Length: 335
Image (cartoon, rainbow, N blue to C red; front, side):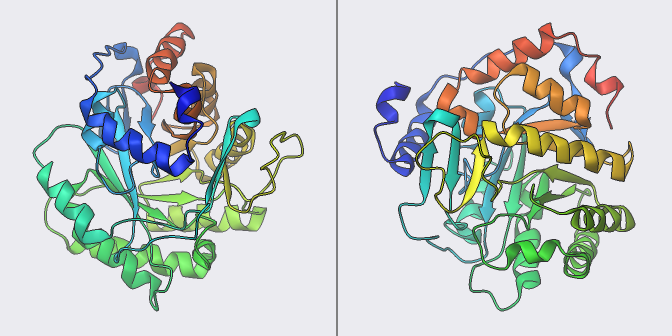
């Protein structure tokens, strides 16, 4: 089936997958109680979640929970609908089990996504939303505030995406002063909203220099942020990439991101200390990869690109491998 799908344009194949997912029977996974963990107050049956980018428009969060993910992140969502960058903009690097994308926050917009999330509001499961800014916005902070205020009642947590390489100027928001202003205003807005307090995470790039890493760590600690997601796609191109598509412009994800994203995760854990929740993302394809992220300091993990190459059967294999690895009970050693 995957060989047939890989003959299709990547976006066409993805669209077909989104349409087919609600038709699939739910998986009855029973992960060991040893794998339960808590992420910034969110109770998870196991640490493996679905990263943003797969379900940009909140069409199948419950279907993906039904396939066994313990938590699902939808988005990235911008206030106004936008088509994203011109096609082609997604490239499979099959020889490297990787993907390059330059999608550019293509999504149906805040109101459409919010209405879908309203329809599932009474459903169980941890579903979060990843928010961003429109490409042509005059006020990035205002865009993020719109996303937070509209989606806050509808999700379990929110992620602030300032690290995609495919929106001009976006990564500049990771600099110390712009980041302090953005997060400060978002946290102040959250404090003004009714209802239970929900976590606010920041998703960062894997291409930061030492000063950039330090600025993010100091800002996150000073503002008492709920956690970091480490990391987004990379603009770097490892020299051992084999695919003829390796020179395409965009963010690289998949197996080549495992080592650099895990190294960044370990550095951020050292900078932030033991208490702040961290989510490890990038290159996960085996139970050993999940265990490596956890040992590097992750509280939980997310994946996406591995599904392109290994299918939905990947998740039960990861859980079985993680349980067989005999890791210490997650809840006993994680925040």
